[in-house]
Figure 1 (cartoon, chains in turn cyan, yellow):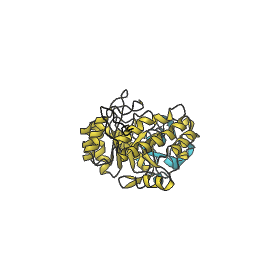
Figure 2 (cartoon, rainbow over the protein chains, first blue to last red):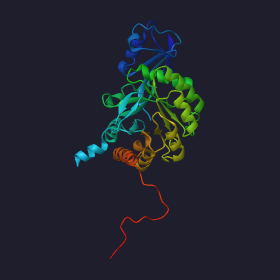
Figure 3 (cartoon, rainbow over the protein chains, first blue to last red):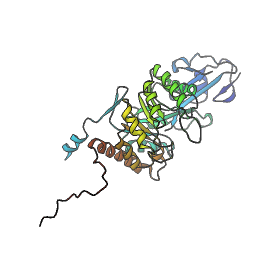
Figure 4 (cartoon, rainbow over the protein chains, first blue to last red):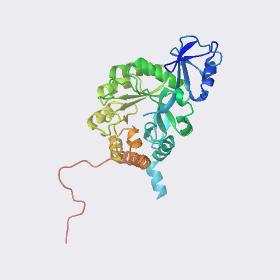
Length: 66
Length: 264
């Protein structure tokens, strides 16, 4: 299935959940905030959160700012 | 002497939505050459509250160090900002994301109008303030130095109102001290100068006006020697605050001799 991750179109195996996606990208789950189709998905809910074709996933972190 | 200094500095704290702070310098974490330098500057500045931003994780640079690895959360209160947002909806979305990280309910609300001036959109800022206050955030709102707008933001429930001294990153200092004085006279909530200061004297000047604190970033991060400037800002902030509390002499047109008349 194809979906958008941080604006980039990516191919993902059908059945991947959000926790699996974060793991496969090699990201530290405790350092990020996740949003799917503009809805925040809390860290505790990522496992088992099924992703679907066309979803817009945002993986956001704190960066330097003023 | 140490006891005298303690007497001078004692009990000069302030609160934002019930949380007590001693340092009156809030420091941004952007634009530093390295995370390590940023961490040193935060320490040298004596700050207790640091601003951060939220951005997409670059998927091609996933092994980059995380900013939070360099910020001691036991020592610093995180103040996430909504920088780069041009509508109330966007700013509210970013605030929700910031809170979802579970590290802070504070938000530096910033809703901009255009990229060249980075001036705030007053109407969108007011709208977002109302909503975020209702949602339980501690809202510290960036605004222009318009005294009417500052009062509207306080009425909307902002926990702190933060007029710009001059445009963000411009280093021009406080351009309209009279507006800041009027804002201070009218508002009961904490007023901070946010943005525009360039040097230690700008910070001291802002503090002498009576604002509770100053928020800055570029003035330290882009100084030739950021670490020295961070320490200079700490001292200027403390000096300006003490000068304000001490109460300056009125300005006079003519000389007033400091020495008694010569009598022999």
